[in-house]
Image (tube, rainbow, N blue to C red):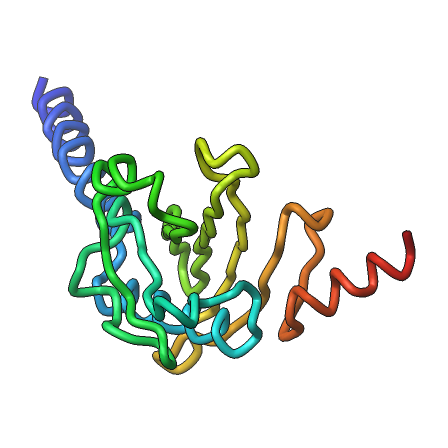
Length: 175
């Protein structure tokens, strides 16, 4: 009888502790998220992966869907970065030419995977087309280090440290 109670109490204890461990494994610190955002934006700016801003309006809008205001820098290069809620983007879609968003932030052990979305007005002007970049970083000695950048629209080509435009040019030569 005592063994059954001990077994029951042990089972209850284990089951009550497991959700806490599962939550901690899936959470991401704001400092890590902020650093990953900064690294991705700096990569996009330096590789000129996308037209980073309109010279007449040096502002790039971001959806607040997966990031908080305090995690987004105010500026990257000459571009001012502004956060808009998904509702604001929906209301202003007729006047917005493009906007950006971050997808899920996944961290497993020392590896982070982050999706970056770039939306441009579709040819009909009624909605937006989406481009995706998948980033991977690894934490080494407390710092996030670039591992790869993939563009699923380009057959999943890994572009490690090369601008997407280099890959596009190579694809044009082949076709």
